[in-house]
View (tube, rainbow, N blue to C red):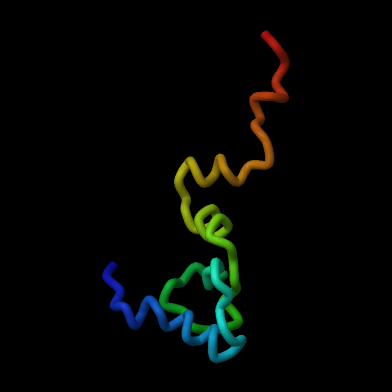
Length: 77
């Protein structure tokens, strides 16, 4: 789905009005997972790593989110 530049920035504007400047290096994340949402109760600041891990359903993101490798705890063959 195509989003105009204004739609992509509306949530950032809503955050700034409600909470002030967005610190460098942080993203505004939608806890409701609706990219068009501008409800500040559904927004939070996250690091790029957290944003990527929580918003990317791919295998790499799922593996990166794991605390440790499950293979290391398996018994030796």
